Length: 205
Image 1: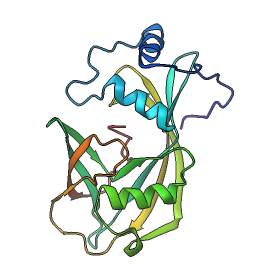
Image 2: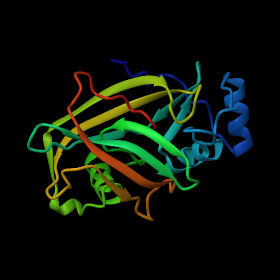
Image 3: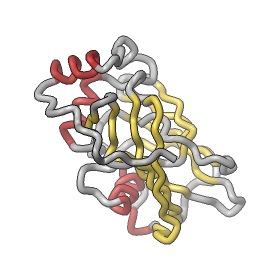
């Protein structure tokens, strides 16, 4: 468990994309792999900061997310829904192997983010689902970002169980809603797996 450090100073205002680049390089982050393979680009991080999804802290430099919701959706045999892969708009594929997850927007509650995840990623009407709020728990994770290699990231993970009727019992695909916040993902591949002993980390965020 990672402890929060609210007293750690922010890296300061990032006035431009070039200023963000300079801040990262000064903090020892190599950008050569960004925007290639499964990694996101510098522009993607700039958008996250602009929308309030992410901020930068200094000493040492790290990325702090507003939060990530992770939905635990079970079927009758105990298996849970797992996002196996994403297909990006440019055709690249990203392995995921985690439950449905969504970055929280600035000022958004975890319930708001759960409903948005259901609507945008699973293409489910959130009014038909039941969010089991008594199962909600929060844990902090800190590790090198899968999306931004070399940039240490702090993830407040909100895990909650959700009952979603009518999902296919076999693997299936969904097309990301056009109004999705980042607009990067085109398709999701879903499958059902046994819940591992350790909760899956926030891979891909």
